[in-house]
Length: 136
Image (tube, rainbow, N blue to C red; front, top):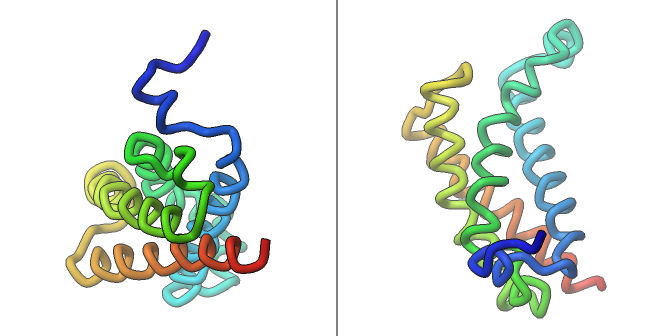
């Protein structure tokens, strides 16, 4: 069964490496952020803690990124098209992640945390994609 026309225009097979890289970038960002607030010993003793940190933002990403076009044909052409697409995808995805974190998962969505997530998520995702195009 083919994807509906709306999604078919926003999903390109050539963008598969970006999907993997984006998830890795988000996991690294969230892990480093968590390590600024928790110790390695705490995380080792609570192995599911990080999953609870990752989940709201990865859910937001999986839901929003394809809709905005983070994996469209334009996203695989050049850094000039890919970086803005990933940032435009991250902003609403982070908002979804923050809402999930505030109402479904543990944690909160304080204004300073929201600002940090919006900025650092944009830098992490845009930065890794820019590096991809620079070195490919």
